[in-house]
Length: 312
Image (cartoon, rainbow, N blue to C red; front, side):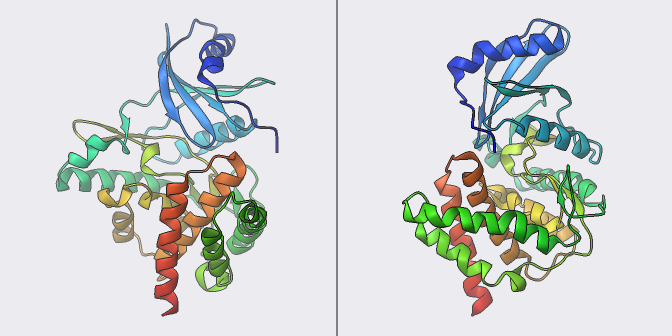
């Protein structure tokens, strides 16, 4: 993996407009930082001909190219707006993608919690409509969208995700960088891998990171305005796309329950999505070096609860 790049506002604020101008051929002004996560930091910018655009800087070189590829294939297979890729750029100082701007706020914004039941239900229905567009697309093989090569989901998931997570977190426990409790929960679940992770009938296209921070809506009406920021998009088990719907306060909007109402899922889906989520949080930490401990703790608690229920 390439060395991580620094995501520093003092460096990026003057650098990103220069990169954008080189690719777009017009002046670009940073308006404000939109926020960031484990792998990137995004900025709202203004151009004379395109209006508002987003410039996103990435911690890991190559992730800009990966996300651009993911956005383009996901955009073709949903009716929900997604950012149009304008350019990608990588050099020794920055890995960047320029893209179109999606109006609205992400659904993590606290103001959305004030909306009543009917608006929350309409929002959940629109989100699930968009996801089902992806899940209607069948692939030939399982794996990351750029290079699916596995005939079996279980083989791909175990070899490419679970094994690296378990091997990568084990030494971190001894170093005090990953809680032993979390590792023990993952180890206990992984010992029951065959009982938890089943083989789906076929690969489907998934977003990979559709939590409420990556779902945009109009604040007043709670109308869905777009999906953003895929990470780890795959040809996968459709149920892998569902754990993020429960992240943060996604359950307050009924996103997971709406999907379950609309599409029949496997009997062990609640346990499986808790396992997927806990493994994913550890994977994000290993790849980015950034720990969001409350999310690890949340999914550790949920997975322990599901394991107790399974083994009762």
